Amino acid sequence: MKSTRILTMVVFALFVNTLWGGEGVTLKNSRSWQLSGRLQFQHVFNPDVEPDARVTRQGFRMRRGRFQVKAQLNDFIAARMQLSVRDARVRILDLDATFRLLGNGYLRVGQFKVPVWREELRSSGKLLLVERSPVAAFLLDYNLSGRQIGMEFGWKTANGIRFVVNVSNGSGMNVREDAGRSKSNFVNNGKLFTARITVPIGEAVELGLSGALNEVGYRTDGLVPVDTRDVIMAVAPDANLRLPGNLELEGGVVLGIVGKNFVGAAEDESFVLADVTGRWLRPFSTPVDNLAGLSALEVAGGFSYVGPNPSNQEFQKMRVFRFGPALYFGKRVRLQTNAEIQQPADDNQETTYLIRTQFTVNF
Image (tube, rainbow, N blue to C red; front, side):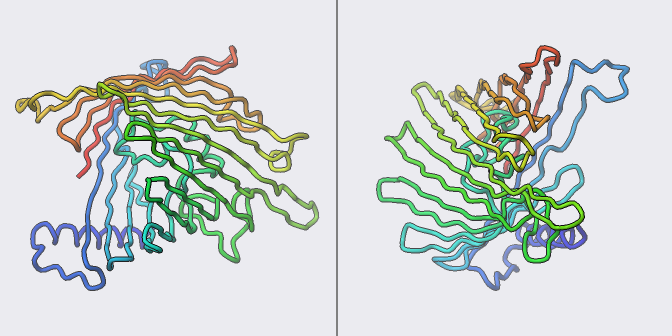
């Protein structure tokens, strides 16, 4: 943690020096640098919590703080580092190098997102709704998506079709899995294998298909031998549609299996996930100067379904509805408000309501 904070201070100092005295900055090892950042300020209100309850029912938080440096070493090699500040905790998100190969191909090494689930691959500054869906959270919980440490090869054809294959630890962000680590459910000798193909159809339609296989569990010999080795697999087709009238639709389905040895069950557990999200955008003819340059109105909504998963109490069968308006202040600032309704399939569990409001500033 101390080294991460020192690294953050160094990068911030370089950023400030570039802004106020950029002519004095010498890039020793790179041809150029590109700096960017993100601020997300959020308010969450839970009407189910009584005002005199022992927990709070509403309040503010810094949802995200991001700082990113991209360096172009030469015509063939680029590197990137992205830091996150959330709830006073500094973490490294992306830390990778990309090598251009064979014209339209690349090799990437380091920590970055594996090519699974279209919504997860969207930047947090460009999500259709305030938060990602429970489908994205489910995949992340089993380390089938999100940021992993590994390597990836990608290729883009002349007609825009993209192929990506990836092999990584499958143990999560910032988690080492080199020789000498203590074994756990996801830190083991196994690996996560993922792949994705994306096919554009004209300018209005893009189809995608992702696949993931994570080798999970571990084996140890002792007084009580343990062997939970198995696999978690998923296949996820998805699509993005850009329709007339500034309407955009995006969604997908996930079909998967959790190995029986991993969960200690008699049979493999299957799961079905689905999500569809849409938004309609109405730009104004001219920005409203008296309202910080208000430039567009947006309305978005989405539906998510999580199928039965007996061994994972956090993701029982449920339906989730999310919807609400948003305001744009130029291209880089957005104010969103979403109502969220989570309906468990079990009638003995109560429906949960939340209202999230978030400012996103990409700078």
